[in-house]
Length: 104
Image (cartoon, rainbow, N blue to C red):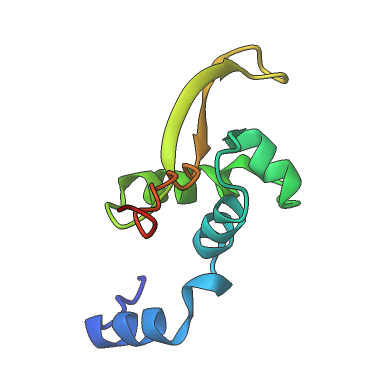
């Protein structure tokens, strides 16, 4: 019989593990360091040296579902390994803002 984790223990574990230490945090930071560049899940897996798609795909989906995350889904492309259409994800490049400091 599997023991259930007490809710307080689960909260404590989440708080003691900074996001940057998690796969989700690593993927989020990695994409954030490359604004505007689009990647497939498989490319992210390879570039971050993970051995299994299941290490990245659920974390990317979590980032896409999180309203506070800057990660967005882009166009679909053909996967080089499977030949299937797959999503791309990216963090949009910051929009240029007009400089009104010189306005008369």
